[in-house]
Length: 195
Image 1 (tube, helix red, strand yellow):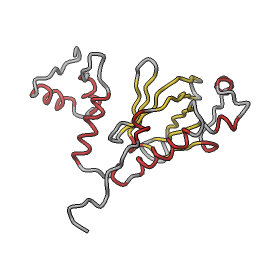
Image 2 (cartoon, one colour):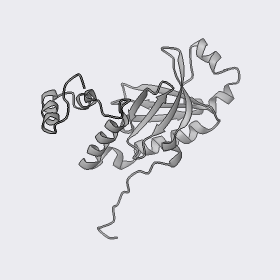
Image 3 (cartoon, one colour):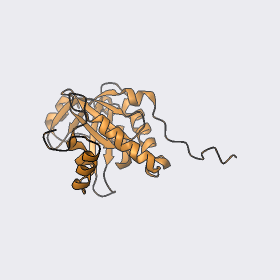
């Protein structure tokens, strides 16, 4: 084996994950079900969903602890949501479910629940997203990969004019606001709240 060939290849994102799929995202606490388009960015750093209002939510792939589908996915408890999803035929519903479990550790977990419009889509998504999350290079990447990850996140959160809002820089580095302001000033970029 040559020393020039890497032992581990970076994770590859399947085309259907980056193209996206239509799901309904639901939450038992708010009893709201919203249509979304679920995607993984082409480099496999983030799982994100876009609402009809063009609002977007991001989930870092490294924070994903588990993905569940079928009978192992979370079921709605609220009667309102059960009616929305026509739970009279639970087998049909189970073929469409996907739950993504994320959190900073194995105790503080958040459950993101989705229902696809087509059967067996949740199964493929659960398997392939978990494969990305559990890939050895996902959490053990090089410094340049982590810098690229920051750039990808900033580019995904553009404002309507197609520019990166200054507040996103401050959110990315919340511990050192003065240093971020100094760096933006050194690059002759806007650094105030008005931008």
